[in-house]
Amino acid sequence: MARAELNYKHLHYFWTVAHEGGVARAAERLDVSPQTISGQLSKLERDLGRALFRQEGRRLVLTEAGREALRLADEIFLLGERLQEVLADPELGQAARLVVGIADSVPKLVAWQLLSPLVESTPNLRLTCHEGEFDELVSALSRHKLDVVLSDRDLGPALQHRLRARRVAASPIGLFATGALRARHGADLRQAPLLLPSRRSSLRARLERWLESEGLRPPIVGEFDDSALLTTFGGNGAGFFPAATVLADMLAAQYGAELVRELPELSEDYYAVAPAARLANPLVARLMGMEAA
Image (cartoon, rainbow, N blue to C red; front, side, top):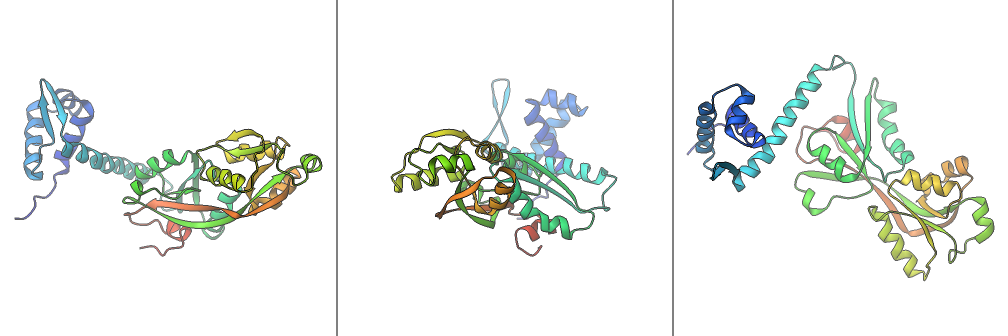
């Protein structure tokens, strides 16, 4: 038996009822009669072969199928809003566009090194960067607000069905310190004040395991969500601090901080995260080292 073609107007009625909390409020918002909405909802449920709501007293409550339908409808209509925004842009067609989310644990210089080849090789590129927490950025990516996310975290199993991640860079980790701290402690980390990323960072647990394996328990004098803030404090002498060795020249020039000890057991991996199923932005495909589909 052939499956009925989805009627997106009926789906929009369902979406509005679910968000407004009832048929009457949805009818008021859409400027149609409640009878019209009720009839179209019934038709949608028949076409789908699933009940989307159940009656509990005077309230309509989403069924399990209804909750899944609402999740997908949210994506459909948010994408529709994005379509209108993009097509209304007067600069459409005059510049390539790339909207990037950068996790706040990714060093700014690393982000620049990853994006600069695109900036330098794409005439009239219109690049927009947003910084934030990984989970917030992934949520925005799922809502089609971003083209790609740069992160130091790989995807967990729960996200792999709808997103894909590709490792795009890696750097060994080292411990750095300013001249004053090096003069006081040398390379002896037993009593040296130490700055660490917060437990939100994937690097934190690996650093703790390394310290334990070396029998080191230096005093931890600071923890930071933002890698740039950690580097600023470390570069101003607050403590020894970990950083990707790719940043060594910048740290020396900006703060006079030098590499005290390289940790060959540890490296920082950086990932580009994009939707698993979408017509690829060719710039995202280039960033991820993949040919555009």
